[in-house]
Amino acid sequence: VSRPASAQKRLTWYTGITMGTRYSVKLTELPPEIDPKSLETEIARLLEGVNSLLSTYQSDSELSRVNRNSSTDWVEISPELVMVLEEAQKLSQLTEGGFDVTIGSLVNLWGFGADAYDQKVPSANQIQAVMEKVGYRQLHIRQSPPALKKARADIYIDLSAIGEGYGIDRLAEFLEAKGIHDYFVDIGGEQRMKGQSPYHTPWRIGIERPKPGESSLQRIIELETGAVATSGDYRTYFEQNGRRYSHIIDPRTGRPIDHTLASVTVIGQTAMHADALATALMALGPEKGLELAEREQLAALLIVRRSGDRFVEKATTAFAHRFIH
Image (tube, rainbow, N blue to C red; front, side, top):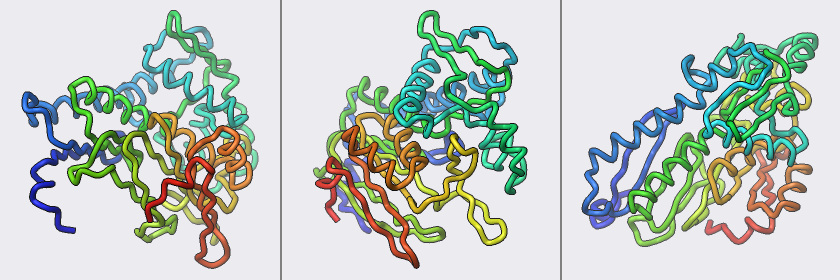
């Protein structure tokens, strides 16, 4: 699509790699006192900081050090990590364990994590043994002084279902502090936006059709302020004996999700909340996920797989008015 020259002139666009995925920052009309090159450097530095906090792929990150720590006493951690973990624990309670950041050992066992084994179906005994290390109630967090306590030394925390959202929120706060109020931030497909696009319209977000190997849109929504996150089973998976095993693992069963819910899109105030909720609703499945989303008055779109290549949409009351296409 060719963009009008006036809109192109108004747009500043940065892209790069962070957290093992791509990021994109679009800004409409930078304030005159801001140097675009310096801003690009500051954005990259901020994202490096987030990575060094939450990454399981970076061996010297704060989270990696926590995971290696064999103590079951209180261990001092940063206030930032406390904040992310507290948010995660609240969602674990809300979903009765459907969302659980102590899932790391299972993610690795199924071949989807930083310390991954081969991608193959583990034995029931292997799953059972690893399940002993999983359970959000085995993790204790306190704010003052900021610290964490593991009930078992071998608990492995994985923040990949909430970390991208946290990075986006940090970026949004940074831009706001700079006096930038028209922005669109995307990390790995999770987004947060505010104000207007270069076309003097609200920002438009495409929701993918959840079909493996295909890249087409199911819906388009418009949003002036807020965050959007999508979680699905159609991007990262492996196949064994004709069956597909998704990277989304249900912490309550120790196995990849096995239901007809193909993707969930959540609109929220913060990207961290939307990011984690989308994953949580995916784990809960089509009925329980929709039930929780309605009860909590979440703006959520659940796309359910039917026989053949058909999909059925289930939008919560709070989401229904968002469609423009």
